[in-house]
Length: 322
Image 1: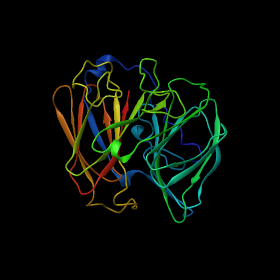
Image 2: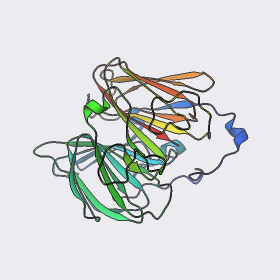
Image 3: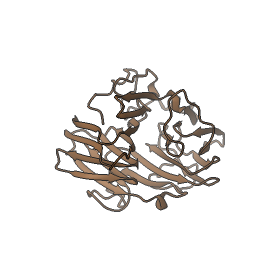
């Protein structure tokens, strides 16, 4: 969203797709790492923008590799924009940029001649490719605040022709399931349509599948990070591994209890109990409140189970990063 370029990645990070010694792989086990809400980058700009950054972005920089990039994923910003405010026209290049609208409306305009107002439940994808320019403002009325996630991922190939996609998903569709809302374009996957609008997941030119859920209290969902798990949350666990670099990220959105500052603790509201079971049967557990995230590493063949053990609906997104 910002015209300021994110801080460069650390030189020690492996390049996208870089191979690692398979002997070293055998020593690695699935791991979950909590990213507390207050540990994220935080910025408030002139009273019109309140933003949290999971990864290095703009003036926020961290030298922790997983907080700079996580496979192809580079940005998860949870933004709140004041009425009539927004991001003036600015350029992007060689990124897949997508927004998940939580509350309010976005007024989007770009150099591909797209002008659109997007609302809760919408996903808007800009495949920037060789370069685009766009602006995004709070398109709501009165004192309505805009609350959304914006995510960036590196495309699988460079030099793509810029493109634009939108999809809409209702609260009912996301209720107590893991609904795929973004998935890779592939000739073998007919459920992902390369059309501006349509049914099914929003297309992306990156090995990334994004699931969304609104989990009722005491409800549970599960997902297997298997070799063919893209678009499947019902695959059988512990399938044959195709590589050790499979990662995931879970983010519990700050919606029910609202915005809070990094130093403010939260002891009520939605709460997720997460269990990750590896191929060897070993399990790891963690618990999240709104704003928290969870890095999932070396998870090929692992089973994740997510339960809302708190009060009120828990709205979250889960990235499956091949």
